Length: 117
Length: 111
Image (cartoon, rainbow over all chains, first blue to last red):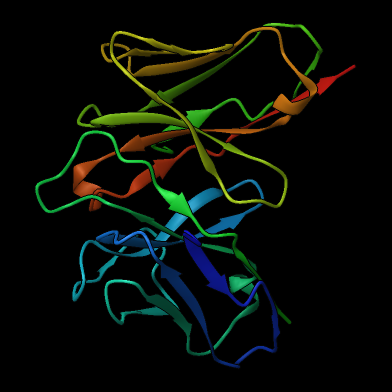
């Protein structure tokens, strides 16, 4: 089990460039998430997908789009990168079903460190 | 007001010390509570869930006070390897079952 994998690990973009961050999980989890982490700000939710075929906005969705390609994969796209999007991006998953469960360990990928110049 | 608040620290303690972290949350509808640990430049990992009756895992004890909307983590006999950032985390259904993270408390244990 690789768990949650993310590519790339590092990326430098120029303002206005686009890119897609890839995330995949092999744990058969239903829910997947994208967070960004900035110094002094903690982890903030960008988008999430409660199940295959659904996506919803989180706390800071502006400037991003997502695709839940299948149960395994959840990608994050920056259409026109801005310096304010310089951050560490974490993808996560958990097995939460539509019925819900009280305790849910969320499993994180290793992160993508993005710098926008 | 941030939904989950923590003292950012840093807490600098010697090996063997006991240290306590506190956390408050603003949404009384919050349903589940956790402490995650994050090492420098690494992903967060679950340390322990927090139950209403309080729970212990080795040197770590977590407490929850729903009436005061307060969560705590106690670390006894601190080790050098405990140095990390500890994130207080709350699960809220209306947030799409996503986790709400505090900004974290940094612990540095020295010999």
